[in-house]
Image (cartoon, rainbow, N blue to C red; front, side, top):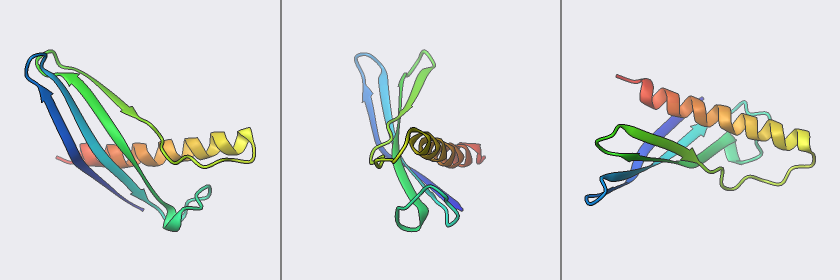
Length: 97
C-alpha cells in the first residue's frame, strides 16, 4: 500500500486574503476488495480554501469517477473504502515532519 500527495495549484486573492490549494491525492493498494480499477489505484483532488490571516480553513473532496454499483450496500461500502483510502493518504502526507 502506498500513497502520494502533491500540491498542483495555489491561488491567493490579495484583496480578500482568500486562498485555495488543490492537491492531487493518490492511493495504491493491491488488496482492495471493492476496486476494479487497474491495480487498486485511486486518485482524487483535495481542495483546501481559507482566509490567510484568520486561520480559517475548510477541506473538500469530491469523489470523481465513482462507478455505478449494483446495490445501496455496494455503493455505501465502495464509498467507505474510497474515504478510508483517501484519509490514509492525506494523513500520511500531513503526519510527516
